[in-house]
Image (cartoon, rainbow, N blue to C red; front, side, top):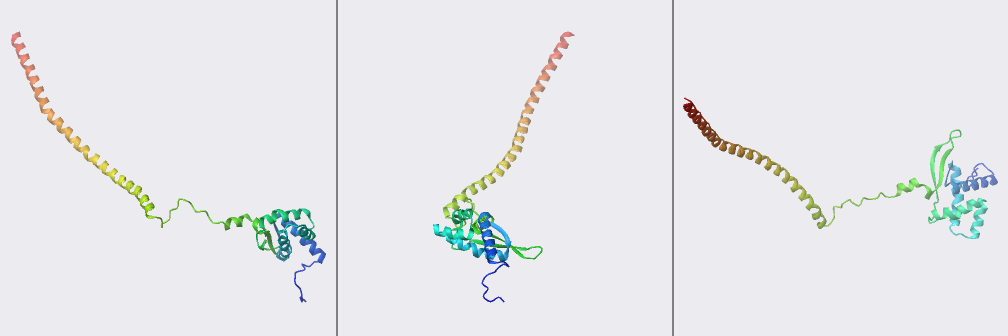
Length: 214
């Protein structure tokens, strides 16, 4: 029966279970993330989080207590150095469990257990997006809105004046053509009169020559 069962024995003897949790805690400190079954991950969380809390106070006594659990000098260096600097400011909850489905074969529920501040993807999602500095607010002062409207109004006036100038140029072109035609027409009678006079003088000279020859 289950009376008085306060933790999961994981189907192992006490010595086997302690050795397994110690090895898993060392792997978690080294790799910052490991994949295991959900039952083992829950037991590992209860095993390693009190050690991280003790590591916040770096004393010889706390190091000896942690070494009694981990039994690895490299793991102790990581725990009291890199890990505490990264997640030591938290009041608790140093690990995260993410379920990944069920294992083929025995259908055991699998998960990933990781140290919280080492997941860069989740940290990027939590950061707010930066706002661009060029965005204008609608509640700005009246001076800024007037100053912004003036160049726009000037541009609109320039655009309106350009088509008018083109129309004036087109209207003046036919008038200039008409004036040129009128000038040519006014000059043409005088030129024709002079030509007629020259022709008449030539005919008179020819007649005089003919009479002299006779």
